[in-house]
Length: 564
Image (tube, rainbow, N blue to C red; front, side, top):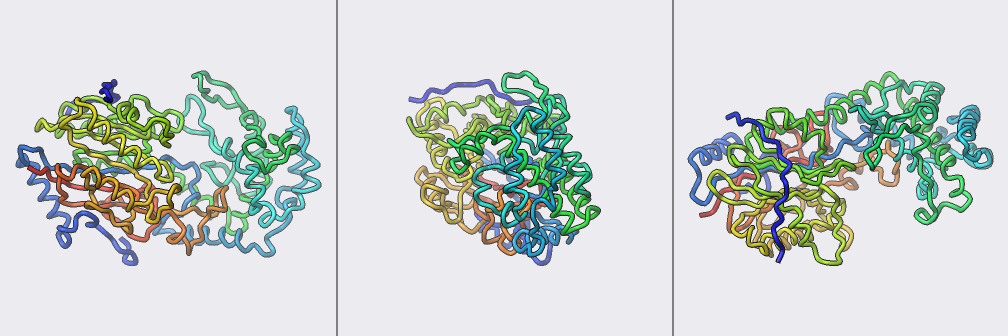
């Protein structure tokens, strides 16, 4: 028998105080089939009436939403977004795509972009800190490579991680004592300096990499003063077999040189396909909306559009968002429940918000450990710290619930094992007997899954039915009812994953990923909708996030009635 372990609850009590014509806009969809043709205002009025009347002795009507709010992406250009009032964005991204796909005469030798003078200065810096010179690699190989066909699109260079590794380590550095990170001078992050000239870019790049020490928090809680070059990691042949033994021996200076060439090509490309006074202001606008204002924009939508919900299940929530939420109106309206063992490294946590009206006493206990203890022995379930939050709570009608929020792995392979564990925990522990299950999750399911590789959505539907569960979509989901629409652009390090503008729909991540599950014998659906605007509307065939909607997952909501 799995025993119930009551953990300390991380919740934050506060005193309670009472479209575009070219796209199809969906307000009512999925499990709301019985309300097709009914206006949203009528549905909301019906729900409010039922709630004010006290529903029934078996409980009250519940309004529930689940939303993977998505971690902040430091590269504003990484994914195709929608900017309706700026056609310059689409033109810029298409021109970048053309530059990389069909460069023609623009496919010049590296030394015409990252010059011999730049390399000489870089080599002096690298040998000056005690590294071995990589001048032979420059003279005999890299300076003569074509910037696109032989560098940016060289698959072997990619598999050796010689350009992507230094980008991963130094792209954006969080510094102790500041909410603002420090960014490497490059196109693909939030760097705010001027990248209008190659000489200006390189001077800033070299200074960043070699001159300024930054206070960086360590795993043991201490703070170390580190210059970015000191953060670079060796590339091991044991992990990346394509790298040669000779390259492994000089992998740190070699990756530094390749990283500089990579950034130089990006700056050169942007200033070739556009003008600095055009693309840089556009980038600043995107950074402001997608990065710096992501938390305020997310909280604004939750407060203004979903502030009357009974339950909000959120995924990929940062610690900063939790703290900000408790100091705003959401903290007055909701008990904000975060995992006891929050993930402070990835800073992505599943969180549950309980209405103080519906759940006046807040959560009773966190039972995440009970769920995790129910995983099969010897099976490596791909979940990370903070992905699961499971709690118990009792509403104002004295109805008891197990409420869970879950962020599935990219391939969705943890989704069924986690559901199995939740059901096992609820059924095995007498302390959880009589509790009704509400489960909001980013299942990361796919319209067309691949056995053993990606979780098929219809297989997931058949699986949860075995437990007499239903979903906001009905007993079985519609594989074509998508809650994501995103695709990588050409302005990111993994060009093999880039989607052309015309292929966004076909090759992007357009899938039915999000669910709200509940007992089929406990509830029936009144109304379900999805939202990628923050206004309870979903625009089909629109890539998102947008400048107004800050996530790459739509918000999924349902109103359910208790069955007698």
